[in-house]
Length: 187
Image (cartoon, rainbow, N blue to C red; front, side, top):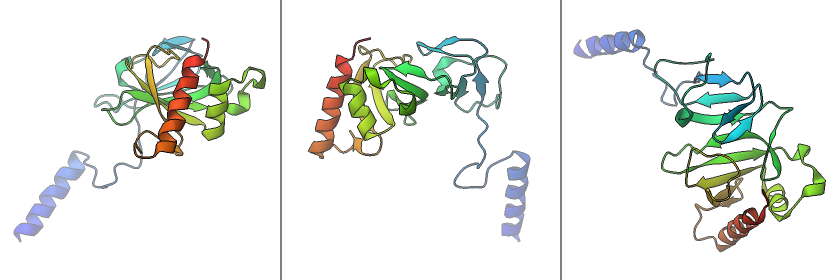
């Protein structure tokens, strides 16, 4: 009887306080976000009107917001499909802060279909041949621009090349060369 009472109390509390019983988490995420209404400087990047700024889960806020929230809580920038920004000479459509808070950086997603093939350099060629996304390590997480003085390394190129695999000499050498090519890019 005690077990039944405990189950009843726990069920009541779970329903009353909206506790998620799904061990995988909620199937629906409704993090706060803001859609820019004019060109806006975000994380030292000028983003166009219509850019989605999505923020970390917030206790009091969810869904669409009427104004921008604190940049320190920004999780990702998603640009309008027809208006990518140029990052290191490459059109990009999304930038995501690394999920792991111990890692200082972000992932940049390229849209090579919008690339001006006249201006391909070594950096762009390497990026285009390995993946559409690269992981960027930075000193200052408040700067997501192509600031070579802030960029400390390229930590990944898609799933093919990862700094995580320290014993894989081929992957480390590839990422070292990729980072050197990044350093040669003119602003």
